[in-house]
Length: 116
Image (cartoon, rainbow, N blue to C red; front, top):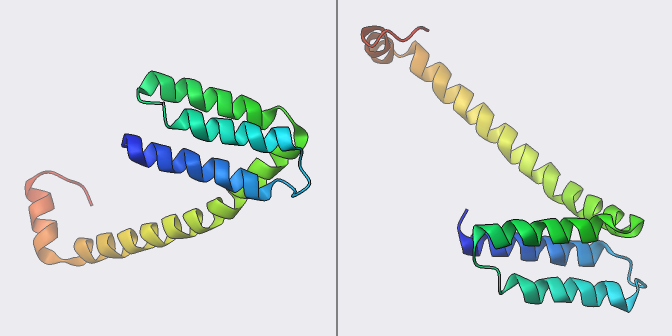
């Protein structure tokens, strides 16, 4: 994962949790999330990424309502990701099944000593 991809992912997590936190959440929670956004811009090395991730995780685990907000956010992201992964596996299985029935692929595989 590139640095910009990681930054986008973390920013998406922070935004998602903030959206899931009840509108009446304390101001200090929202300011803490904003502080994480600010810190995110300064993270450049893998070691600092790990430290940042640990700090963010500790913060999100520190309060029950933050844990709940994080879980709601992850569940919303997880369902489409699992559906996409399942579809990709099904497409791969179809391609593999076609390749196994193709005479040319079987001959090539047998020459290399690959089992069916």
